[in-house]
Image (cartoon, rainbow, N blue to C red):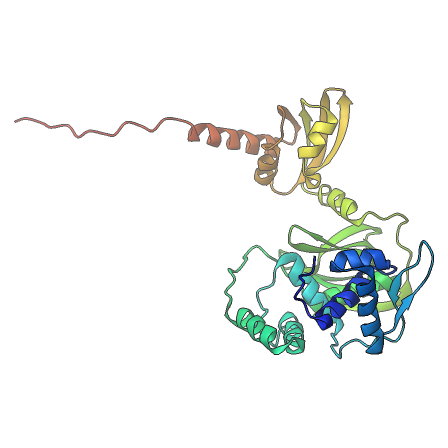
Length: 331
């Protein structure tokens, strides 16, 4: 509810915000949101119209208020790189908000300059003075590269990537950019690679350059990009493994990360997990959180890693050794 002492101008602005957020809102609902009578709500709509804001209304059971064409927005413009940089900052945290040379810092500076002076002053103090701990595990891609890939996936144009792997190998390939997916602070390009004629997922922070090509493509129908990425990250690695879990499929599925493999029911009480990994120790740690007993029946490296993890955990439960006492010798 809006407080009674709120000024008519403030109520009119709130009325505009409610109409913009809920096109077709009725006078009754508008009045309820404002905490006033329907007559007062209509008066605030009249104030907006007197200010030459095009508020349209429709009669009938499904009628209501909406903002018509011709409403002028404030002269605040973002480049695609700045806009995407702000989205990325919201999704995974960005620590260059005070740097005017950074896309996020530049875009945020424009917002601050468009704010009323009292609000802008406080926002600027926070922007410049707040200290954020560096997330050393974060991998933030270049907003310009990411923006180009997002637009190419929307427009359905192939792209050429210059890529550098974690090991330092560099290569160039043409791909169909199906979708950009954010997963656990990592930005991935889910695509079809023409070089190997197969689905691939590439880390966008490792894309050194991107060029949009003239060739168009059709993405798979009913594409579930997140699920497809999770499935892709679980296959094709060095150590293929199979795990038999003593638990029903539905229970196991709720507690198993999709990135470690695919699940299928063996019977009503047993589930099979098949996957692959390049890091057996990490894979064993993921298995340790399963809510039921399990047995690794494939991949000797994963078995050794699970055994080592178990021994380390058992050692942690051993009571401390008694203190050593020095012996005293006599002449």
